[in-house]
Picture 1: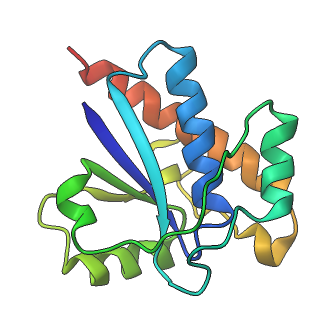
Picture 2: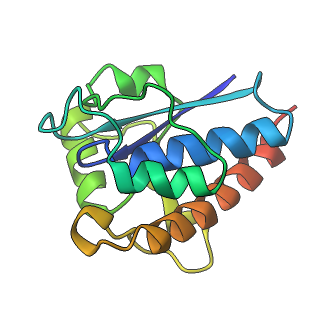
Length: 153
């Protein structure tokens, strides 16, 4: 079982979008019993809040629901629990390393680092562009899934 944690600042926009999009891709590929994912935020400011409505609506247009997902904060113990911890932007990566006390196992990376154009995923809370965020997340999730499928027995 490969376990992945998607991480952004508050866990109400980008990381839950990545979690749900990636979960849908995994399910469609018939890999649900082999790869699982969750999401969290580096901050506690949104803890307990539901997925932000425009993010939920963007996923809904893709036919993807969010269920009862509520924001949670990433903890140091997540480093041992997950095989990969995937941040949305460089600031998330820095905060994730701080929370985890470093990255000795090289598990922390940015979602779009595995694509032909490595870059941050802009926070739609500030940009208002949830479609661009969705497109970037889909691109990153597709690249991540392809890299994982190569290593599956």
